[in-house]
Structure formats: C-alpha cells, structure tokens
Image 1: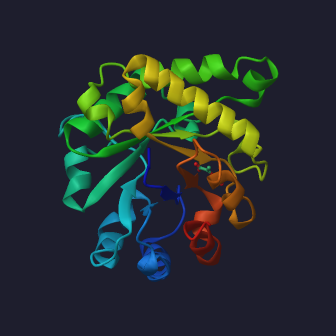
Image 2: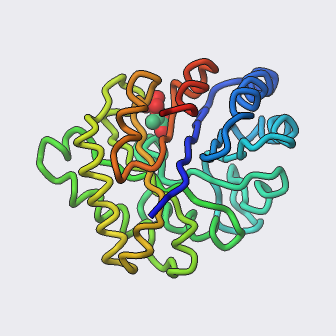
Length: 251
Ligand code: PEP
C-alpha cells in the first residue's frame, strides 16, 4: 500500500507575523518542485492569515497547532475549526506533548478536539508518545495503545481514513535525541496494529503515521526508509529554512 508521505513543520510559539511570512516564502520556494509528497507548515494562530496569503499559489499546506471542537461559543482563548478553515487551514495538530504535559490536556479533551476537527473538515494529526520514564518502565506500547484508543474514540471508519497519527516520543522532542530507526519503526508498526484492531487491517494500511522527535537533515533519510514511517513532524529544524528544505527533499 502506497501512502503519500507528509512532512509537517510545527513552528510552535515562534516568529512574529513578518518573520513567519519570510520563512513561509522560502519554504514555498523550496517545495515548488515537490510533487510526490505533502508538505505542511503550522505557524502560530496570529500568523495564519499572512502565511495563508504566501501559500495561496503553493502546494504547501497550511496547518494549525491546535483546535477547539465547537464552531463558536464561550471558550476563551480557543480557536474554532471554522475560524481556521476561513484562512485555508487544512490540517491541525492535536495532542502535542507540549499540550499534554505543559497545559494538562487530557486524552478526553484531545479526543474532543480531534472529533471537532473531523466534523468541520479538517485533517487532525493526533500526536502520541511515551515519556522517558514510561520507556524505562517498559510500558511504551501500553501508553501508545491507550493514547491511540482514547484519541480515536468515536471516530467512524469513514473518517479514520483522513486521520494522521504522529509518534513523538516525549524524550526526543526538542532534545536533540532521536529515536533510533528501529525504535521508531517498532512503535509505528505497533500503532498501525492498534488501528488495525480498532478498524480493519486494510484501513490501518492507509493511515499515515509520522515520526517526530529531533528530525533533522542528518537522520530524515534513514527514518523515512522504514516501512511504517510515512513522514515527519518537525519542530526545531522546521524553523531553519535550509534544514527544512533538505528534510522535505528526503530521499
Ligand atoms: C515537535 O515539536 O513536534 C518536535 C518533534 O520538535 P523537535 O523536532 O524540535 O524535536
């Protein structure tokens, strides 16, 4: 089963709108020759309108870093899926480890965000991953299974085909430590099997599973060569135009 690779850049809480526009321009240029893979950048909410204009004639997809589940209402500080769609956002990251660990987002909340994204036509990227302590305690697969199952609760098979999952070991995010390709492949294969048990094996074969955690030009090719790794969610290196350009051109 051929899955179209996706390289997604998460800009986190970096860059003013002017800086975001400048970086988006270089990425749009770098991605202009890329036809066999998807590229996405997720700026801060405040830069979405300006970056959307830069990407208007580019194949680079616009992403957001989080999403609420209702169209509108009394949800101070939140941004609705409809508001994101207004600016051409097509994908949203949900359950990023920084949301889970710094802001205390629970599996239940993340599931609501994911379902809200699907309901309003956005593609959710569901992030899952174990902490260093979980890995040392030998419970990595249990944690992954629990996060995948609760993140996908109530998602129908018809919608599941659109969901992207990102395996991001917490100990590898922003630390410079990358999971070995063997560790990453093992986790990806396991996540695919969990999806296969929840839905059908055939559907699980269609689901894209990205690896995230200190992806850089030096390691992207070997990670992408693994059979169950379908792309990358990139933090730090996505803010450096040369590095991200190299990552999107992985071999
Ligand atoms: C991320 O923010 O999802 C991430 C993987 O960050 P980094 O690439 O910096 O580890």
